[in-house]
Image: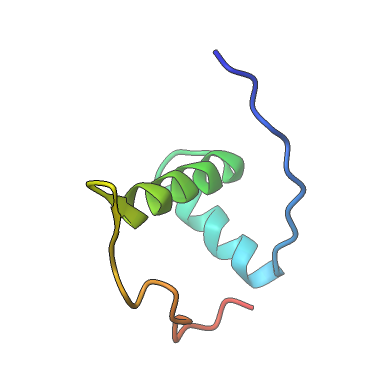
Length: 65
């Protein structure tokens, strides 16, 4: 298995809490949940060699900061 890169990440307390709760629901660690979410985001972003979702970069209307 390829060695994984370590990346320091700073999150607001509110965002961390939301991810931690989601991770618990999915039976993952917070680190595992973040890795899963990033992997899914990259997978969704690229489809058949093309970028999809013209509105993907628009800011969400949610309070996570």
